Length: 436
Image (cartoon, rainbow, N blue to C red; front, side, top):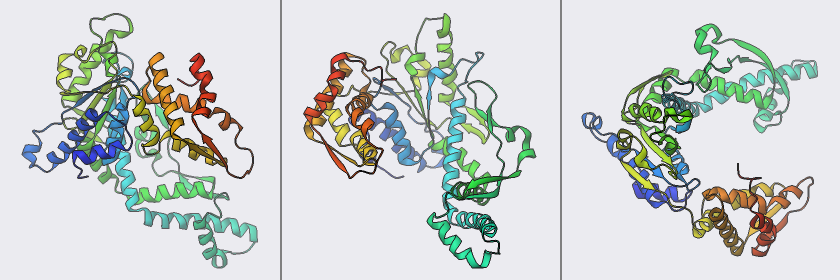
């Protein structure tokens, strides 16, 4: 997608409030990818991404910025936690797993796009399969051949969802279950181990029409998609568009500690180093070169500092940005300006039980004030504090609503309502019920 850095920041502003430095850094990194793609191949090979390291407290938007960035350009994206990996020689996940996860993500992304391209043909083939099963059911019901008489009506009813809950029997591909061979390792299908033994094996199952249609659609789309082309495209996308977000990088930045559970911290850093520098990782879809993958690392860095990472790793993250704690104004904007804000989400949830939620400006201000105060007096968990406050605020109405078909009731949330329902929260600071 050909977006300028300013346009990228404007798109990110819809979901993340503030943190302009971090947005500018990722926007430039993304635009540089587009610029690199326009250059001749021999020059392209020389230009590697400028990886980014984000420093800031939890809940201020580090992960969300990277996630939204990837979504914006439909890039393969994985979020991993540095603390989940262990040094080579220890039991646990090895760092190459993050690239295998990226390959899996790229494969699913490309497969989904290719299936969308053949959706019309696949839908037509799936409808014919379901129709045959429906005719069998109708035959049993009527005791006569229903094909000519009912086929047109059955197809019309199928498309309208009239038979969604009707149970039919149909033949489906028996897909082997995923299994984990190594604790903390990648899930591996039995079919991958025993080759073609399980390929194409079918079994008859009783399903509702809705379930059968979903399975049939997936199977028919799978037949129409060129698997080799999907794998090749997935490898290319992972190598050139992939984004790996390494969270909790500060937790492996301890120096000088050689005892106990922290013994492999520096070892994990040294294992991550070749991945970030550029190496080849073998995945089940083919080998992936990591030279042009964009790596974004993040951490709170309360105890450790960026300088505590080994120098070689620091050198591979040349762009460093600091994200700031959220202010009252930021909380107000999060509740009112972001797309699908919390106030909107709760409004949609409670509308199911015929409650029309209305928040006035005074209520929004008070919620923001309380959130900032709680972050200051207990742990600063950033925007996640709003989830705690909103759950507490709407606990009574969420519990008492539902259970009948009542006319729509409008609930106006004002400053007084907020103070009344949050006095226990602001009084005893007992948040353990909601903060995990």
